[in-house]
Length: 138
Image 1 (cartoon, rainbow, N blue to C red):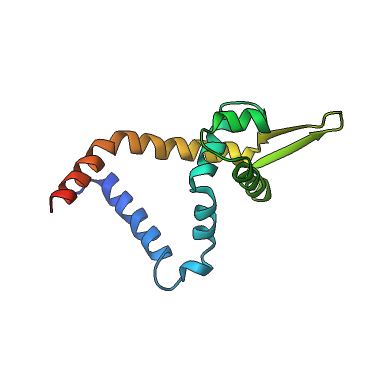
Image 2 (image 1 turned 45 degrees about the vertical axis):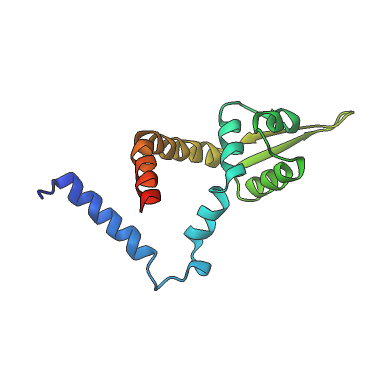
């Protein structure tokens, strides 16, 4: 099999990633794993994408956009995103109180990465589904 320069560079990058996550760095102490775990859960991805499509959203607007999420889970998700610097929460002193959520520049940069992952999934989903079917047959 012939390996091109681009593939060699990619293999070098993959090797760096593998080495980074090697046994020398236990998962529980790895800051990269910590961040990835916090941003890769189901509700966080939906919240980031929904906020990425709008400049700002109120809690109820966001809840309507994320099908199936409970009020409690959305609250927890937004607090975590705010704690990690992906989302800002603006409280307007009026009656009734108005609260709006928006992505920070860090949050907007995450949208781009989620879109890259989404594009990869779209491009490779048939192969993944075929592999699942082959696995079921064995």
